[in-house]
Length: 429
Ligand code: HAM
Image 1 (cartoon, protein in one colour):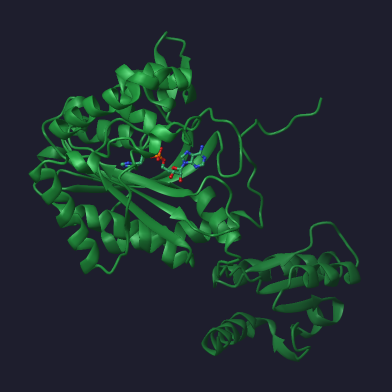
Image 2 (image 1 turned 45 degrees about the vertical axis):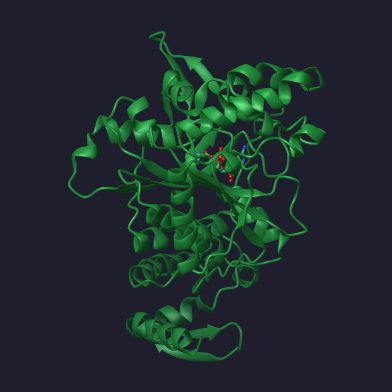
């Protein structure tokens, strides 16, 4: 039997997981600064939560959900995105009743979509996202966008651009919808089957079609921005003003519609402009969803948020040839020559680790030479070799691998010696 990881998923092995951890660390730090504490919701929710929120005409709901019946005959779905679960939790825990709105939350975890596998598109991917629920202040839109942009800049990405649009409010959407139907209807038979059914159900989705995006009618389609009413236009202007204040540059793309139904007003995507990046260039997508909390059964609580996958962030770094600054230095490798030495090695390793000195030793009874080689491969900063003499003298030569320098140190003094050396090294950096 030859088992492989399921299509569209991947094993993250040591060497790669360090990168993930570094990105997660940067994200956590920024969430702390911006005050978006973490929320952890279940990986599956009732299917209806997604059909109601993401929308039953969207690709996600129509084609991409991992839906199953549990033994109690309930229809459940592996979460394809994070917003619905967070909003459900906001309503269920009556967070709308808390005095300080908006409630700002962040999450990071696996999401599942049955998509065609290609570079940057997985069936299980890890999404980091934030939601700010309970405010319709355009300043919070700018804050959310700035957090996302800051993540990319902190990890070292340069070739990114922010694209924004306003989807307007319900009135705007209704007028624009009508204009879209009139625009596409006479030629709808030239479009794919999906677009034909989208025409009446949700014509805005036609603009987001992956099959027909080059059809000439796409470029001439009525733009939502031309239908914005005064309130929506003012709101959009304010968001732009705040972005200007924050020094965040952006492009307005009237065709940016996003693939989920719950959006209105501000919609945005952050794209990679790196030449090395594949055909899917969206790194992050988000927007405002006034009305979603009511849809899920709560009181009026306007919200905004974004989602970004760590996979695409790392691909973008690769495309730009950027390395994360990862520190994972092995401080000490202890070579033990015999069984008595091994006893001492285990004892020393424990005392080193207790003081923050990372330590490795051999567990396969290898000869000294093989252990030294292993220390070399693992790029240990120091090595000590424990044998009969060292045990008799109760001291050992600490070898600094990079310089070859050695210094004899009594066992009782080792922890302090290494701690000081390590401190010195850090100061020199
Ligand atoms: P979304 O645009 O569907 O929005 O996804 C957001 C991000 O998730 C994408 O920009 C991409 O980084 C990542 N992503 C989506 N699908 C895949 C995939 N198959 N493989 C790898 N990465 C993927 C949402 O999910 C909304 N919940 C965002 C949001 C939060 N809006 C408001 N709040």
